[in-house]
Image (cartoon, rainbow, N blue to C red; front, side, top):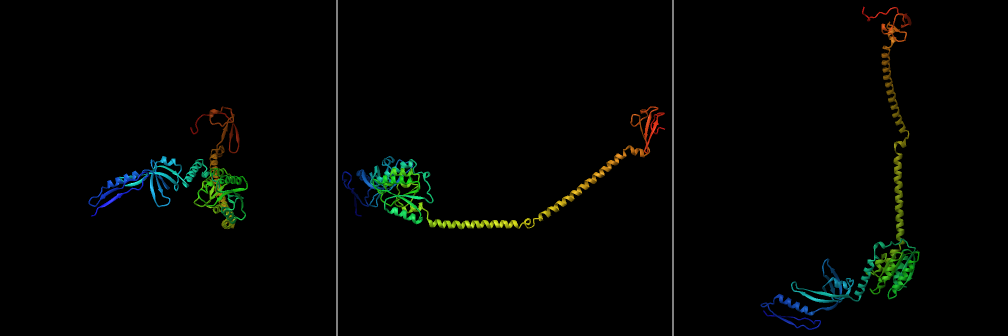
Length: 430
């Protein structure tokens, strides 16, 4: 088998040319893998650090790790590399966002154990648009820390504003979109327009003045700040810190309608509501008269149905009450109660009669006993009752003396007697 010769020929380094390293090899005399890997590592490390310009497409911070992993991609070619950097180096560059363009100093490295090729970054800084994004991100973090983006500060939009304030550039498509769509939705809407430059050095100052002027008008119920799309540099005035603070201080709800859906200036975060486009802003601040009329018709229909249903239930309840026996014949209840009262009266009469009969019999029995013990009954049996001079009945011969006058009560009269002799002795002794 024919032999093979491989050359590891490095490209130009940062300060010198490296010589080619020939390696003789064949199936019968192969080179050890470790030697090839070692030579590759030596060549890569001789390249030294190099400054590159690329787009930062991914930032991967791992909790508790001392290393941050970045992914850089060439802006014109489908070439991307993995880069490791320390958190301190990354934070020193300021706030970096994915998509920013950066200049980084990379040191290539090659790990023999795994055969993995990577870069280590010891310096990185945003440039161009990336520098603008980093500056905007820093401003955004400052304002967020002050609480200017809190949801609690957001105010609701009025249902039908008396006057809509509009801040935009004169004769712009944004002004036309807001005015035409608002009047198409609600023809009677009033719009107070305040023109301002929307890009360039004077834009921030004029935008602030326009917003404050409209906020000072008592009849303005909502303010729309609108502009069409543009580049990041064109939209910088709408991320101006002064404008953001002026909108935050407004007493009137503010709607931000800057650019297109993908444009996100800082004004979107501090405004009470964000609209994706100026046309969307008109839809948010002004109701659609056609939709409101349809809702009104629907509400009236539901109200009619509810009232009809309520009357139907009331009529059914009234019919149910009228069908009750007491309502059909009000005297029917009196007849039933009269029978019950009559029955109770008869029971009461019977009870009273029975009680009187029992009491009559008891009185007769008592009267018979009293009569049996009465002195009159004794006289009727042929006896008499003697009463002494003191008016008490004489029950013993010892209670009288000779010559005493006694009174004898008989059944048909009284006898006056004189005691001639008292003979003691028991009845029936002789």
